[in-house]
Image 1 (cartoon, rainbow, N blue to C red):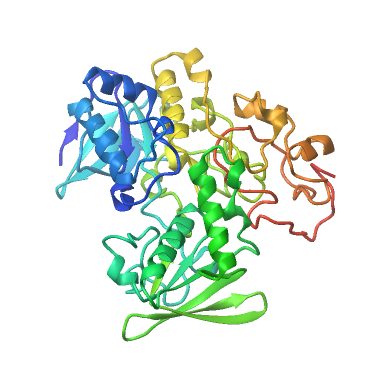
Image 2 (cartoon, rainbow, N blue to C red; image 1 turned 45 degrees about the horizontal axis):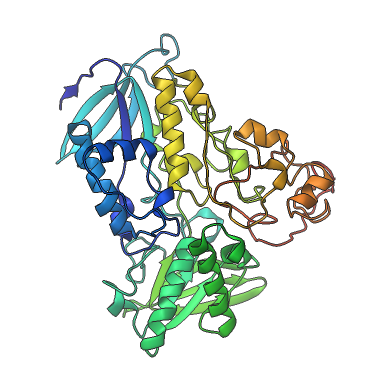
Length: 466
């Protein structure tokens, strides 16, 4: 064990590298939205040639043409092959209040089987959520027979047309999930089925509709993202993919040959699906265990910073976009500690790289003592084509978006946002104070929340849209 002391004013950044595990997948956001401004300046000074701004990189290309050159430019400032297992304040656990403020942070790390402690003045946890998948079973818990090492477990983004082709060719595959990971896997499975007889594709979603996966179509400012939904809808309508809606999984019965019978219900009907592979594209949840000794202000529902959570909660976030946000919205009770990147969204789905870049730029400015730069959060992102509110076009912050009306404001604002009348806006029940969303970002929900369709709740029609 060793203790690494710090020079003056150091910041420890906790990160992870899951991109290589989905290197075969092509991003729907072009290079112009994938490269950080500060990183670009650093790379250009080293003679780096920037990729075509309109090109769509794969995960492998993102690594080879951006992340690897960036790591070389950063040099000894980055420690590789090191895992952070815990964060605390020096000589003070979570319960210690007196003298807590101003204490340095201690990060417990492991590298090559050896552990050591690193001391820092500030910490940014950008470790992502990739390693913590949501279970396939209902209730947020694994179903009977669901284990991570089951032979039918195929992961969220298998390389269907590449390294994993033999596993899926001529086999029965069940894809579970209602996000872009599920959509990508379904589309490449359909391509495989065109040349491999016997390849059967079943798609199961928990909602009553797959509308939110189909997205904004031609109205999407990212054509590749809109095309995904359009292609998927066509495959379902043609019968190439069998769609099962309102499906809740209760169990997995693994056969001797590694295949599985997935049991559950759709509505009041019992359903059993036979499959050789199950692609679990059910999303992820943040690993908060390593932060147990840090004082956090997290929303109880989505496990995101409390100020950000109302705008990304898929239960209520209907108008599809998240305004720019920075250090002030990401701060926690322990000063100098931040969660950034996709982990800052907690359990809410979908996140754009550019959003994380602006988060970290704002945090870095605050740590450097430049309050004006930290608060000047600016972000230009493509519209989703799904229920964007024209009344929030000038929003530049969470506070601005909240004041701009949006789908849970007046009836006129609701109609303007494409959210319908108060009777069908999904906002008419007694809910927390309504918060509208800004016009840019990536949808974390669509009209009427999770299901993408009207759902009547058994409560009085009053509140934000009543």
